Image (cartoon, rainbow, N blue to C red; front, side, top):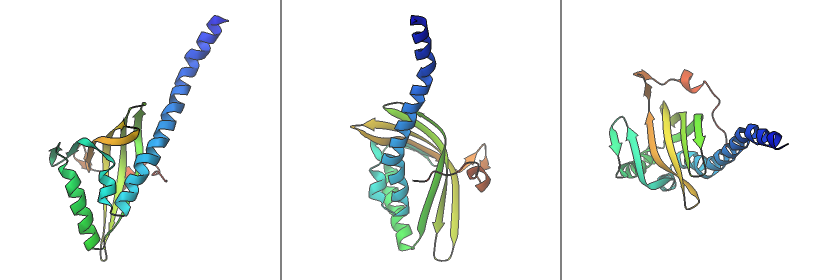
Length: 167
């Protein structure tokens, strides 16, 4: 009987763990990713910047930012969009998520549509994000994204491989 219970626990452990991961990822979706999308689409740089930790490693093709310069750039960019009456639509999906009670490593693809009065621009990219839960709140601690993979531009075909997340 003891062996049966041990086997039951052994085989049920991965199932319990994945339920916990799913619950945590759903929590992250509501606490972080839904407000992230909303902040972009309402051009609310302050709301966006609060989703980042105090110390962030932000990596772009232009280099590494460890001084939160990107937060000021968010404010400037959103103000430029607002003045130009540019609407932003942001969609994304996750290719991989590894989560525990304190950290999450999330990889996915995004599509950002910039809808101006006279023109439309669509930007596709891949992101790698590290989240940390601090004081009960999930915050972005590392943010890396790119528009290319292996020197090839990310395209609509790459983005369309999966359905984007809906909140």
